[in-house]
Image: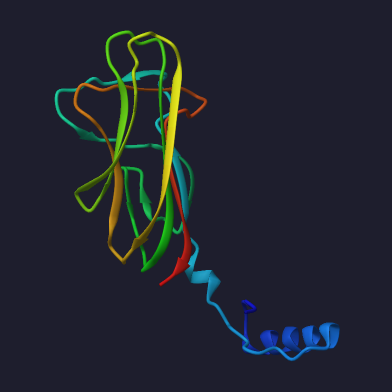
Length: 173
C-alpha cells in the first residue's frame, strides 16, 4: 500500500512517477487522509521541583508543562487525553521519586473511569527512582485516558520532566 497526501492530481502525478521508476503497476493505490488524523501529546509535572503528595485519596494528575499537543487532544487543565477518533493509540506514563523516606512512588492509568495499570516503586530508602510503562490501546472517539496519584503515594518532578504522560495515534480502525 502506498500513502499520499494532497490533491488527486498530485497523487496521480506521484503514482505515474513511481510506475516509471519501478516499472511496476501500483495495485492497489490507497489514499490516506494523514492531515486530519495527527495526534501526539507529551506533558510533564515539571516545576516547581519537589514531591507531590501524599494525599488522603486518589487524585487525577494534571501535567501542566505541555511539550507537544498536536491535535489538542490533551487537556492541560484537567490532565485528561480524549481520543478524537476511533483507532489504536500508544500511551506512556512515567513516575519518579527522589529524596523521600516516607512514601512509595506510584501512578495509576485509567480509561473512562476504569483502572487499567499500576506503576509503583518502594520509595522508603531516599534513593532516586524512575518507573515507566506503556500500553497500546484501541480507543473510540470520546474515550478518556488519564493518570491518578494513588492515596498515600508520592511523585517527584523538576525541570528535567521526570514524571510525564505521553501518547500518540498509530492508525485508524
